[in-house]
Image (cartoon, one colour):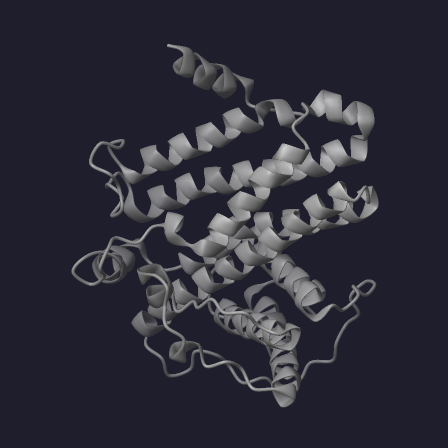
Length: 332
């Protein structure tokens, strides 16, 4: 069902497909809940201010519970996407990431080409809620989808590294491809969360992520799922440190699979820059250090440049201008 969502159809057809997909995932949630009810997340103490704010908790789960909670995140995400004005390109990336998460969390085998599904009566989402309530909920829902993608990507990259250590190249290639799906979904999920008016974000949401509303200013660095992903990437590159050309001499498939993942990681950083600009323009980040760059966009741009400089020799079309500039700064 997720594979068949018409992401580039007209608004009526697209919304109908999303509602149908949400209904199907709702059935998956019901089936998993029948095995055992979901853990009450609010009963689990938050380990950080970020977890408390975004309503994310961390606890060891059984396979059934992991699948159920992942499906719940996807279900809420799809219901909100019925009303969110997300671009077709981002919708395709987010839905593809959701589909991969369902496969990974349930252990299901991917099917063939999507077949048309007869439409069913699905209640409209968001009926009766004020726009402000929908926008505030969307900010949390999109971030929770992002967290799900972070955790799934971290697992996929760690799996790929483990397969490489055991000499199973084919399995490693498969998990690298899965990880790339999730990383391509990172900016799509963030754009989903940000499909709200910038004025509303500045007036009503931004202040809730900084003192006195929170103990400390919130930032992406505090998301544990993202830290797990970055640690997994570091481990992967310690196993595959060769340049693109050197690795391609050993395995073109592996060089290209690693390159696709790294390119997606760079694009995620690039799109974070443009997203921040659209939301806060030239203002400083709420979590910015006093000695940092002048504004949020400049800080995010530096993060992009560092990542592009690190990856330049590892991908086929590396940003060698930035790599040379970063190297020059280190030796100046």
